[in-house]
Length: 416
Image (cartoon, rainbow, N blue to C red; front, side, top):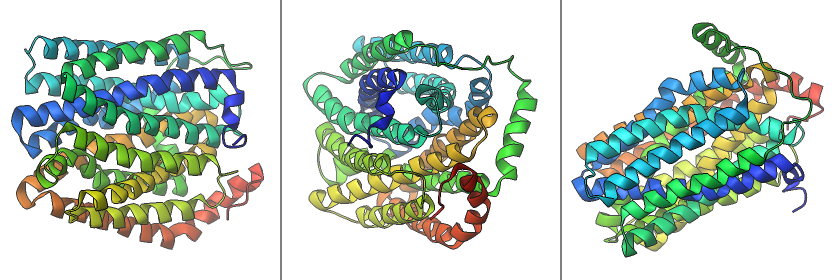
C-alpha cells in the first residue's frame, strides 16, 4: 500500500487529490442528472447521443489549443480559471432547472460551454501531474492515482445522483456540482510553487505550436500508434455509457436509481483498474496489459449488449469499466513516459483529443445507430471493434517495442 500511494508523499499532489476528489463526485452527479433530464424531457436516444456529442465535441476542436497553453502558461493559474468557469456553468444550469425554465436546448448549449472549459482543463491537469510530483519517477503512479480519483467520482457520483433525483430533482444535482468546485479551488490556492520550476515563455503562435506538437507526435511511431488506438477505443466504446438510460428504463424497467447503479458498476470496475495500475512498479509490460484489458472490455460489451438479466449485466459492466480505464490510463502512462517535457502539454492535448474528443463522435454515431438498428446491435458492434483493436495491438507490440526500447533503456526500464 505504501508503494501504491507513493505519489502522496508530495504535498501539492495531496492537495490536488483531495480537492479534485470532491469536485469529481459533483461532476458525475451532474453528468447523470443531465442525461436523465434530457431523456425525461424527450424520451429520445438520438437526443441522448446529441447531448453527449455537444458536451464533448469542443474537446476535439480545442484540446490541442489547451495543450499549447499548457506548455507555456502558469498551470496553477490556468487550472484555477477552468474550475471557476465550470462552477459558473453548473450554477446557471441549476438556476434554470430550479425555476423550471430549462429546455433541452439550454442543456445542450451549456454542455457545449462546459466542453470548451474541459478542452483546456484536461490537458492542463494532465501536464500538471509531473509538476505535482516533481519527477518522472512517481509520474506513472500519479497518473494511476489521478485515474483512480476520477473513477472514484464516477462510482460514487451516479449513486448520489440517483438518490438526489429520486428524493428531489435534477436541479439539486446541478447545485451540488457547483458547490463542489469550491474544494478544488481552495486546494489550488493552497499549493506551493514547485521547486526548481523553470519560467515559461510567451505562448507560441497557434499554428506554429500545433504544427510542432502534431509533427512530434506523428514522427514517433509508438505515440502515433497509441493515440490512434485510444481514439478507436473511445469512438467504439463511448456509446455504451450514452445508451445506459435506455437499458435502465426499457430493458430493466428501472428509474434513475437503476441508472446510477449501472453507471456506478462500471465505475467500480474502472476504480479497480486504476488500483491495479497504481500497484505496478513501472511501465514495464504495459503494451501487453493494454491489449488484454481492451480485449476483455470488448468481449464484456458484446455480452452485455444482449443480456436481458440485470444481475448478469452488472458484472459485465464492471469488466467493461475495468478494461476501458486500464486501456486509457496505461496509454497515458506510456505516452507521458516517452514524451519530452517541452512537448508534454501539446502531446497531452492530442491525447485528450483522441480519448475525450473523439468520444462525442462515438456518442452521436451510437445514438443515431441505436435509433436505426437498436441499442443492443450498436453496443455489440462497438465491442467487436474493441476486440479487433486489441488483436491488432498484440500483432504490433514487438514492432512498437523496437522504438520504445531505446527510450526505456536510457531510463533503466525493461520493456517486458
